[in-house]
Image 1 (cartoon, each protein chain N blue to C red):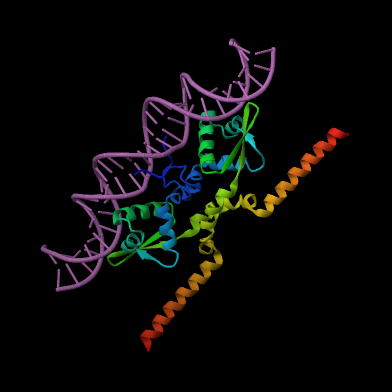
Image 2: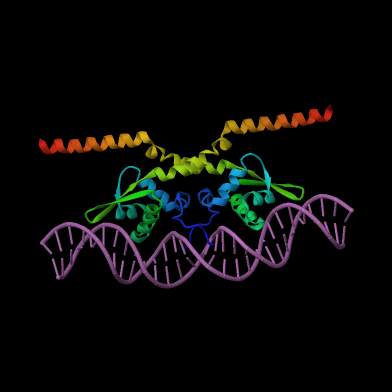
Length: 117
Length: 117
DNA sequence: TTGACATATGCCGATATGGACATATATTTG
DNA sequence: CAAATATATGTCCATATCGGCATATGTCAA
């Protein structure tokens, strides 16, 4: 088995820098493919392929508008990512660092006390 | 150019389910490789390789402890991921959905009014 | 229908897996 | 030093890209 498909879930889809940029660009409003391609300075085919991946994991929606196809953000799929990551927030928090240090010192102290008694 | 290396950044490292599980397991305390392998029910070599990736992006630290090597969490590298995702929070928020609907209706109304005048 | 413009797809090449297995390395102990 | 235990690495295989290019598909206008 090779690496998981980028279309397997939001985690994989979002691992690609260009796709993250696309999602950011779609924050404000819907945009047609060519506009995205120009903004990202990548070819149109590549843009379409990234959009396809994003569509397959449900992070964007498409809507035909004449000749164009307008892509819009559907960020709900990012919620699982957010929930997973938020579970680690305390570990990079400065306060947690302090608490951590404090606990360590306490443990050392208790250990020393136990030996002494 | 092929897909970005899993060691290129936290986004890629975390795209792998097993690696996410490893990070979760390391939340409470440091653990040796074999313990992680047993917990994940994957082979030891595979576990070591996942740990290597996590080490290369700085999400875990290693510490020799006798024959064992204890891996510990260093979640600071997840902060960029969190910051990126949090930028989309408003878009999956129920309140935002409502606001969105409201704005759309307003726009429709204005459009109609403009026509009428 | 023919053009023109906007997108989507197919194919090729180079690369980086993730998993299984065998094996090298490192550390502790007798 | 040799054996035992814990890890790390190298190799092989199958697969999934990502990018570029050519080209098919779709839509609108004259």
